[in-house]
Image (cartoon, rainbow, N blue to C red; front, side, top):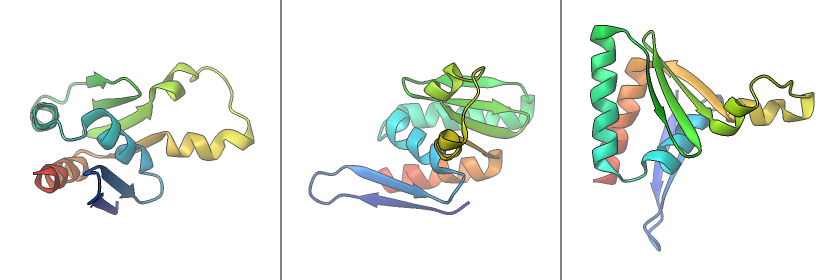
Length: 120
């Protein structure tokens, strides 16, 4: 999983670019965490605990939700979750791919630590 963090020097806003298939992680990071160090630390704490207890943990956000389950991380658009039972036609499959990402817990933890260092 490749990623790049960018900061707009004019307005101080952040931007994240992730490799194909992992775009939802970037959306979640920007839209649900942003520069909130306390929220980031809370997620990092849960990620660390997940390795030891191997239980599911969820963080439901306004637009994106995070699920830690069996040493995997799943991030999904809440819109996608609400439409889960409906069938997507072929025209929406690209949107579906950008609205949901899976990765290993170690990779996700590295992203979070890198993000924390970047926004400080």
